[in-house]
Image (cartoon, rainbow, N blue to C red; front, side, top):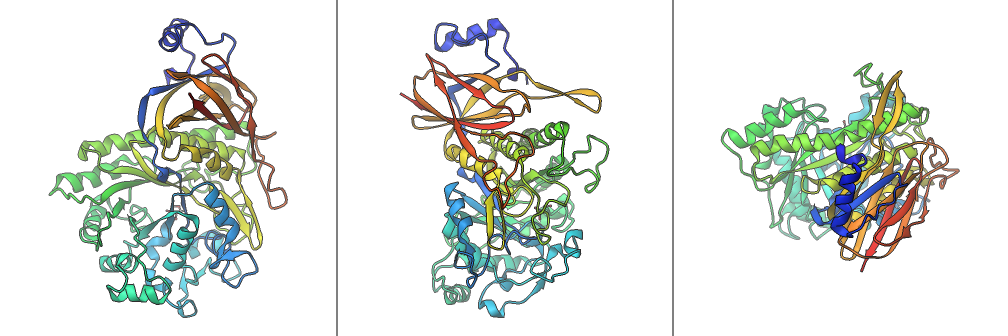
Length: 551
Ligand code: AHR
């Protein structure tokens, strides 16, 4: 924390000498960022920029899938506008079919002739949002028009890798083996490969990433960690491989539940150690939902509103999202007590702010909510956290891609727009595959009153990475009223040019709609390149990206 504040003048002078021999920091600046080119932190896996699609509300039906006969532009039934925009942000991985839905899903229902596929009761039919629906549509009764083949097609069209979540609660382990066999067995090798070929897919899908259940502490079976460890062993001990280095992701904690991680890892590593080289991921879910300022832990009562919020709610939401950093470091420390070589990395496959119902764009969009500038900052600061911990976080997926929670897109029938979150992912795509660099952000905290008591939040934060001669720095300014005059120094490098992009708006509730799809979009940010330093004005309540070209 100390590093985020202004260093004392003697410390600044010492720092500056190291890269210029003179005090190059201007005195009248608000903040300083020092990018340490000689302190790489590890490669930022492109998979940190993944997305999540579940059979819930308007995600698949209305969002992704419009059907081959639809008048809405589509490719093989998949919404074309969505595909095109996902390609723009280089979505590396898509998680499917859930979420909680995964543990009630029988993959066999979603293959073969579409007209013959069964209708089944959707996991979410008991949700209050679903109960209110009069239309007995796919939100209540799953039609299975979108199954494994259609999902793989979606991945192929967007260029993403599939990440499938297996049903551990209500299907036997053998069914999981058969799903892998259906997806990955070579052309002509097994009966399931022939079924796949009959559907138009002779070549194997080669799915590498498999979730072994979802939220097994909750909707995925209500297991104890010890029970789940036994199930995990059973489901993952033998799986057909076909030469593919399957990556198995265990169902990790809710938020920062250290007990779940301790007890699971203890069972896997200590008691008759289970050395499965495929076990490389441990999922974490963190939703920022409790805006009650400590008054309640009730899931419904504690939630805030997506559109009606004040400045305190603004900072509190960002603070809730910022807890991600502590979760990552705490969970990593516990995992390392057992997995001493750190073979297993964190997979944050559900994250984002989650508000009470009421701002969804259509009643069928269960957990649909509007996305404002506040959520763009929340998403950006989360991605910066992942970038700062590339050795710990191997994969992540925003919950969810479209029409649900922290969406990048909204669609209903033939209408479609990108939310401010899309613009964050577009800006941050430059970090994918880059070498993360340590960067020191020094800025005064933001002060505000929280229920008549003083509270504070960091004043500027972000992340940096390098690809060849280009350094990307992303910066979040959470301050609602203050433009921050910022100086940036790149130790040990000469800058030839720099360009900037910024996502900001005239007020904190700004958001895009079907009628005003471009209310919040990114624009150019001016950067002055001086001797050894860059100077930039970071607008209040904004996300910025600097692309700096080195000689
Ligand atoms: O993303 C919505 C739900 O939140 C998911 O189905 C579940 O995994 C989580 O509780």
